[in-house]
Length: 216
Image (cartoon, rainbow, N blue to C red; front, side):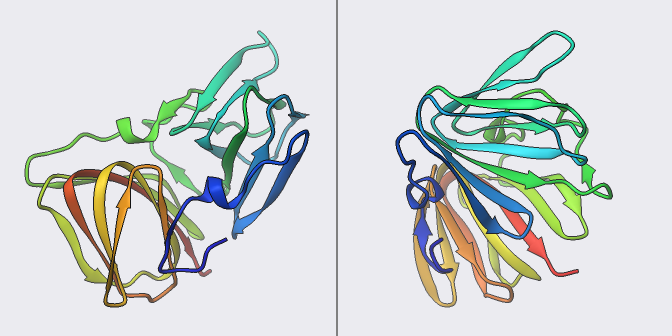
């Protein structure tokens, strides 16, 4: 994956290989999957819940018994997969997605219903002159937050207690990092290291998600 202080695309950094499925650790507790069109991952279950975030392409998830329900997951959408349930994944086109492990001691916003597909950018509204925040996942080792910035708003320079990735969801912004400015647009990502001084300034209205991995 790209080093910190660069705007990049996780999907482009993890291209699919025809006929193959590929997986690898992105950060602690976060795995990136690249599935070529027509490939699949057989139904499997985990003892803990998983948040799946689609970065590119589209998938069909077989949610299993009792009704054999299937759901489609497209770029920008996510789904919380419950623990102990067999779920299969089939790529209808070249696809890249993340799986974020949710610990037993994690707190997940009640806005998210397990098994229901949702658009990350639609979870929170814009508010005039304000910055809106919502913690989707809050656990001792990780936080996943969505934020909406009205035009003219931003975060002043600060540091974070862990490695982080910003996911631009809607609009444009400028990320300041260690004295340099980096324009970012919807669909792009930016990584910064623990302790790195950074800021965010909306260029118009802007929404983003922040994945923060904390030291235990």
